[in-house]
Length: 435
Image 1 (tube, helix red, strand yellow):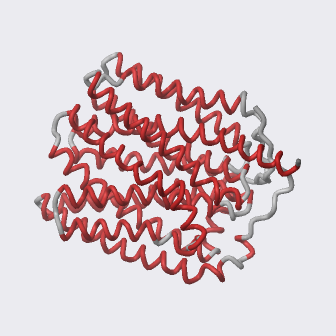
Image 2 (image 1 turned 120 degrees about the vertical axis):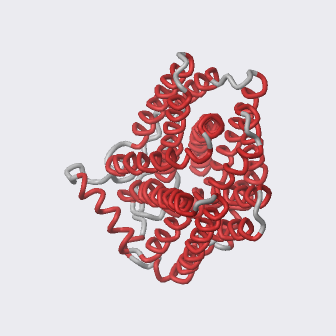
Image 3 (image 1 turned 180 degrees about the vertical axis):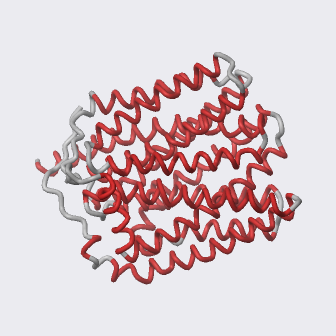
């Protein structure tokens, strides 16, 4: 009887989180296709570097604020606030489109808001999920939660393509519908799923904000395996920026019209979930079982290294598209859920800040370095072809170091897990969820 109640509780908890992951993915993906394709078509691919740079800085600031509150407040209530806040924000962007605001204003606002959603909502949902699931449960279920997000991505990409083809690129209605998705997610957490109340410890209320942030940074400094993961993540961010930028340049050259570019970009992104579903439902669990955390973190820098090498050897759209596709599949299908599950080993009162440090600081900082690298290379080179060789070659060297750092995680993993700072303290209560 007790076992059946435990299984039922796990099932309901999983269904609630899967619905939230699905809704967030529908909104983030469809809006990302609209924002990126619209910006590149209306303002040019080269201008997106400045937008990406500003976006990275905003992400770091937003993540700083998030890291100071995530371990000091109820994560369910924090998720409610973020879902509702972004839902209201998209209503405001909808108004900009309806009122006919300039393209530079509408697409820039949409892109910046979409990027913050992509940064903060997965962070808080991952922190909430690691609270309500044990480590053993997370190894079984986090891949399936990722699969729910992938199905949401397929639906979101399909919506973006449909609006471009059937409604001639009139995306105002899509924005209003996406706002409704997020507001429904907030209501789900506020009412039907109100019994998601994690029993994990929170950081001390009397702890100053700088002291709270310092605790997360010191943990990254003192734990060897996390230190190597830090270096790898930072350099992966540089390589990711370069290959994604080059892909947008090649894609915009092939499809200069706004509607055609939105469809082409949407088709590319909808092709990604075909392989992701297999990875999330079967492949990830197999990798974590047989490879474990010690080896799985070599895949992301390895995939980017291979993709960039291919693009350098075989210049052109096809090679860059293959590299970008491989990088996005490995990132979403293996790296992100593995990192989320891995952080479940951290102490309860630090876990949220570790997630914010990794995804809200390191990756955006790596992206920012990549934007600077590309911009300076194009500025100094005198020609796009020469600039491409400079920034692609520099990124290739960064990824070589990232692969080395990931291999050091593998070499130091067993001894590193004996560090007392990395031992997750057991939770006392059993989390229940009732509808």
